[in-house]
Length: 223
Image 1 (tube, rainbow, N blue to C red):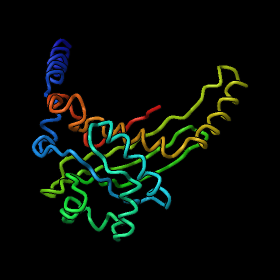
Image 2 (image 1 turned 90 degrees about the vertical axis):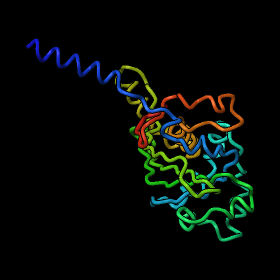
Image 3 (image 1 turned 180 degrees about the vertical axis):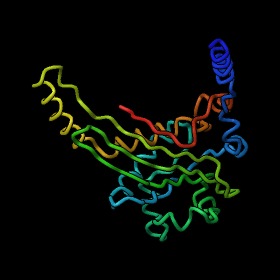
Image 4 (image 1 turned 45 degrees about the vertical axis):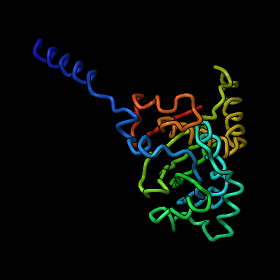
């Protein structure tokens, strides 16, 4: 019995001493290239919700700005993409991106792939599955990549009684149905990009290399 206790203790100590990968180690090319400006490409929509592409596009601007990057206006770039037949990002995700640097001056292009979008009004959950890929317009390399399956909790507690539970159930359904898709998209983006190295316009610029990086695929519920 003592043997198993000792082995268990050793395993616990070893796991606690396991190396936590840092942002500098996981995203070295972000620190090498130091992108300052990002152009947001129209999302690649793999869901049956045809409107997901347009509404999710606008949700990416604020979280990237908050990370300290100069982000080109989604409204202006979308108009340009549609005019120049660049609305379908599938045509560019694996291709040369130098034209976006030559025309806009962008250092990097953010691609997103919407893999799922489900709404459960009764359960009070909005679930978004999105992959984020940041590619350099200079080298063409992927300098940041992360995917998330995020549930946005919109439930409302109506109290402990049976009537309260019923009220809460109804309120949750109404709240979930009324929750703006853009709000849910922003929460998903902010959570998944939380470990993205910050840009020049952040006070933590070039100071976050030692901070822990997250897993390449993350599942979470956010309120």
